[in-house]
Structure formats: structure tokens, C-alpha cells
Image: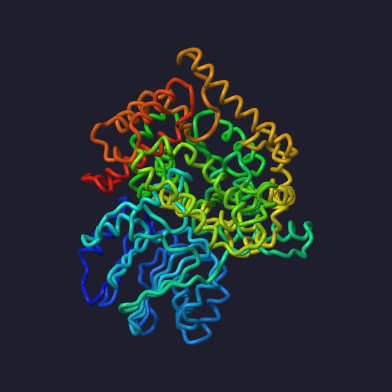
Length: 625
């Protein structure tokens, strides 16, 4: 993935060959551009698309005592840039220059003033100091390994693995969380000794010394004085500005338009004068529900709409290994359509305005009355553990894993969750829940999306604009729950879009909550009926899914190429993961899934992903995406 790589050696060391290997490890496409710089004290490389900040880096100050590398984009800096020009700086025309000179004027705290999504590396040659900083939410990943006074960092872990001195050891806690929760938590990776830089961090590396501090925390307000009407008005105004500042005449823009609420909020916030330079796109099997809804949203909003159909799902088998390789094993194979989609999208768009998990932080997707009434740390922990394991496979881990290995990891998921919850500071259980959500679920989900998408296009996230999110933090949890404030926001933002159907329910988005819940139950029943028909007909009658993207339940049961692919990996006598899993249980879930007795697609997908991870990163494979 485009991003930054670097080395701060223990003592002067050219390290040129290692830097080149690290750069090569993350430059996956022929159109990726490369910048590099080496000094006596540090070595840094940049891989980029030439879209955001296309000028060569590093950029130096006037006397060449300080330089900067930057990955990402910042906003709202023009006025501050003019102030810098009035002081002692001759040229301040680009975002990296602004950050560089702000560092000179304000020191490390310059980063607290930045609004955007970024990773910045500043080399202070006089002080023999390297400063690394990221944005509030940590959505652009930077993985770090510090050992024996030597720092390695990279936007992908595989670059760190180029170091012959790095010992590759599995982090069992990460494995436990991957299966229990369907994702990793906190700053974990699958490798001991490698962590992802926490959000809102300033890391400073000096000879023999490493320090890190957090400059911002996601803290929800505990006391609320603003009325609901004023709150909605502020949210709408801030969101319109957040979308507007992310669209300029410099690039081609797109919005991945689904049938949900987040993407239509972005479309609804686009100023009419700019809708001609923004296009929407939707992808999935022909005739899926999201395509139907998205088409209506695009027509009513007056923007062009492109559809990419998945006519041949067998095609995506060849991308499964790419997904595991590109995400260092942390995203699973059923999103194998993403490289295919964005390889096509880059022909039409440079920057996409995305809305990952906006409804989680704004619509209260993790909140319910039980959560809001939790009276103790233990009670909230139990509620969150149940919600998180429902997203993963926590309920079957005792059967899934080999007895000896399960004995090692059995308590790790709960212990990890407890550690993450302790890092939250909110008093109200609803606020604490969403604080945990932003710092863990939302953040780690976004990191993986960035890695896959940004090999082809740049992206920007208006829901995480600082000014907008500051207002979200003022919203009481009772208003966030059940999309209450979200629906009022959408009604004011775009009344013409709120009456269009919502993909999760296929009812108008403004339908009463009780009808939403009934529609979701009916959809769940429909899936069960389809599976029963498949089982009773012994595989002769198949009713295709109408959902968008790929349906793993369907793929692993119906599609012969996917079925062969899964079996070839899971029933291989030479599997690297044999010591981890219960062989009999794996065979059972394959049989039950194919017969239609149960949906084991998530478990199958994650086990295949983990086996591919072991082959790619701990086996002897020379595979490159």
C-alpha cells in the first residue's frame, strides 16, 4: 500500500539495501511512485500514487536542517499557511511545507492543529531526532518495531519483515482475537514485536531513546446543554463543510454508493454546483438490492452513477491470496472483490469520499438499552464481550481449535477486551462503549480498507472531519442510539433522499424503528427458508442472494471453484495450521455448510485466511501480490 517506510539505526549505518527492500515490499503496482532519502541518522522512503501531494519528498526548510515526508491529506490550513508566510518562511505552498514550518514554529504540538488523515515523518538533522505523528483516528496505518535501540516502521508489516534481524514469531493473543471477534484489537498485529501506531500519537526517536505521547482522545461529553434542534443544525452545517472542503477541481471524485445511510449522507451533502465533478459507483451481482437503491439515490441527487457487476464470482478466487498478502493476514478472503473493483475505478476516479462505519459512531449501532443501563465495569465488559463475539466466532472456539492450543488462548479474548476497555475514560456506559468502538472496531476496520483501496485510489473521510466529529462527541448516547439523531440529521441534510429505501430493511429510510426491526427479522427468516429449500432439495433448488458484494454463505456452498479452493486448503495434509485447529471439526463444518444444514461461511473464510497468512509470511512462499 502507498505509504511510508523507514529505519532509525542504532548507530550510523547506510542501511541502503534494507531501505530498498522495504520500499519494494510496499510498492505493489507499476504505477506507484517512489521517493527516498538517507542521512547519517535515518532512512525514509515514500510510495505514493501522485494524487495527494504529488511533489517529490522529502521537503526541506530554508537551511536544510529539517525535512518532512507526508502521507495523506490535511484541510483548513490555507489561512494558517499565510500566517507562516508573514513570519520567517519564504515559501509555504503545499501541505507538507505547512506542516514542516509549523513544526519549526510550534514544535511537536503543531500536529494538534491538523485536520485530516495523515502520517507525517519529520527528520530534525541538527537534533538527530525523527518525529512521527498521525491523525486523531489513526486510519492510515504505520507499523513499528523497536528493538535494541533500532526503529523500523512501515505502512505494511511485510516491509519490516525484510529485516534479516527480525525474528518472526506468532502473537497468540492476536490469533485469539482474530477468531473470537473477527478482528484484532488495540495495537496488535500477528507478529510479536510489531505494533500499529496508536491514534493521535507523537513518536520521537533519538539516539538510544524512544518516547510516545497521545495528543488527543476520543472523549464524549458527559453533560449536555445544547438542544436537539440546535445539535442537528450544527451537525448538518459541519457535515456540508466537511464534504465541500474534500472536493476541488484538482481531481476526479467518486462516492461508493450503497443502499445504506452513510453514503447517501455524503451524496446529499454535495453542493449542487459540484455534483457535476463527482460520480457515484456501486458494485455487486447484477440486480442486487443495493444497486437498485443506489440507482434511485443517484438519480434523485443528480449525479452520474457507474455500476460494476460481479458476473463471474469465480474470478475472485485469484484475488484471495492478494487480500491476505496486502493486509498482512488481517482481512479475510471474502473481500477479494476489492482489488478487482478499485483496479477498474482508478480509470475514472482519483479520490473517493468514503463513509466507513459512520452509522457505528453516529447511529449508535453498538448501543441498546442494556448497554446504557450497565451499572459496573464488569457488567459493561460482559455486554461488550457478547456483542464482539457475535461479530466473530467466540462461541465456537473451544470446538474450532485443537485442545492444546485452545488451552493457551482460551482467556486471551476477554483479557484483551478488558485491557482495551480500561483505556477508555468516559463515565457514561454508552459513551464508554462508543469510545471503545472508535478506538478499536472502527479504527481497525478502516485500516484494512485503506490498505486494499489505496493501492489504486486515494480516499477521504468526511464523517471523521475534526469539526464534524467534535459535534458528534457532544451528542448524548440516548440520541445516538437507534439512529435517532442520525435520522433527524438526514432529514434536514437531504429530505429528498431520506424517503428512499434503506438496503438493510428495503423500507424507506425514515420508516419507524419498529418496522426496521420487523424487516430485519423477515430478511433473516428469508435466508433460513432459502437454506432449508436447498437442503430439502438436496442441492437441486437454489435461490440466489439479493445482497450486494459477495455472499460467502452462497459462494462456499454453491460455487464449484470456490468449494474446490477451500477444500484444497483446509484438507491439505501439509497445512501449516494443523497444530492450531481441530481437524474433525473442520471436516464437519465443511460438510454441514455444503449440505445447507448451517452457515459456517465465516469460520471457513477465517480459517482459510489464517492458513494463507502462515504460508505467505511464515512458510517458504515467494509470493508477491
